[in-house]
Amino acid sequence: PKIHLYLAQLSNSPIKSQNHFQSALNVLKSKLESIEALDPSIQIDNETCNSKDKYNRSGVGIVTNDHKLKVISLEEFQIRRNCSGALVEMTEIYLMDLCFEPEAEKKCLSYLEMASELDPTNPESLQTLASVRISQSNIKEATKALRLALSLWSNNPVADLDIYEENLQMEVVEKTAEGLVDNEDQQMIDGERDVKEESGGLLIEEDQDKLSSLPPFETSAQWAKLALECNMWSYSIEVLYGCEAEINEDGEVHYLLGIALYLLGQS
Image (cartoon, rainbow, N blue to C red; front, side, top):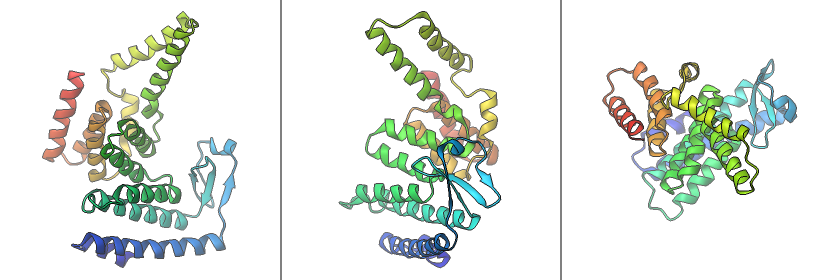
């Protein structure tokens, strides 16, 4: 499949690129079917899935879309990741070069769904999904996808902090409407707000350390751009600082940092 992947990158025609990616995908899927036939993966129940240990001697553990922990070989994991990567690239072509095609939106969502099924642990498919959702003006779903991508990068539960606070606020609003709110509920909200205010709206030092395992520079910078469009300024700033540490002289990173800090200050 490597030849088709290289040709897809080098091709000047988006249609030819799509054809090469599809050819590579067919070869990879054929290999995957052969591996699965010879060495079926191990399915583990939900209780085991909640364990932090996602690895064992037989290979890599990935959490599937039905919340099962599936243990696969390293070879199968790499093939799944390559399949997912090819589908992400095919989606990007429809987002850019073929965006005016009638079936562009449908193709994008279809490719990303397949990418997620093949490799639920690939953050790039979630990041691309966020881009699609932004193009649909669905900021809520885009934000959710970006947070999930960030949590996959850094295994960082703090990415769900805002979601937790939002759910807590909604719960208290419902209780207020029913006359059931009490001081304890209000104290919980005030406590969450104080934590965020004390940190200046940024991730605290412990959380910054968890962002050390970021993906390649280009992927991180693109995530930060999408995060800015979703008003995720504090997260965008932390990722951009990581990009700056990697390549200090990149003008675009400094520009994006300036915008993010300005917007955070305005908020």
